[in-house]
Image 1: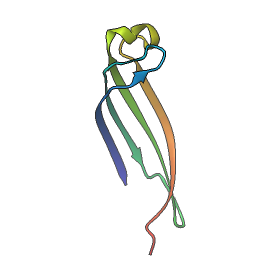
Image 2 (image 1 turned 45 degrees about the vertical axis):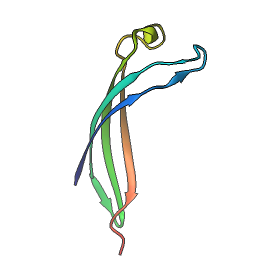
Image 3 (image 1 turned 180 degrees about the vertical axis):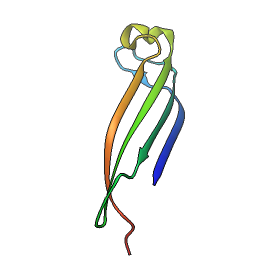
Image 4 (image 1 turned 135 degrees about the vertical axis):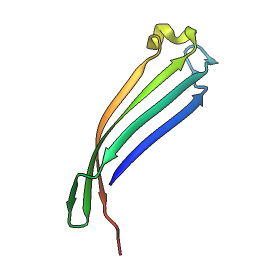
Length: 81
């Protein structure tokens, strides 16, 4: 069984050092796949990537259009009766 994820968000985080709010947009896409089934346990590796676009005033802190990526291992119980 596979899982696809997608997310789009508009954030307004406050930077305490600058004491103001700046808009940040992000989009995330990823996928995971149930690879191992052991008894009632399932293990699914997956990955996701997020692309960010922030106000130009934040370029000095984060760079222009930062990217985040993650690889994960999801361990969870199967269907319970």
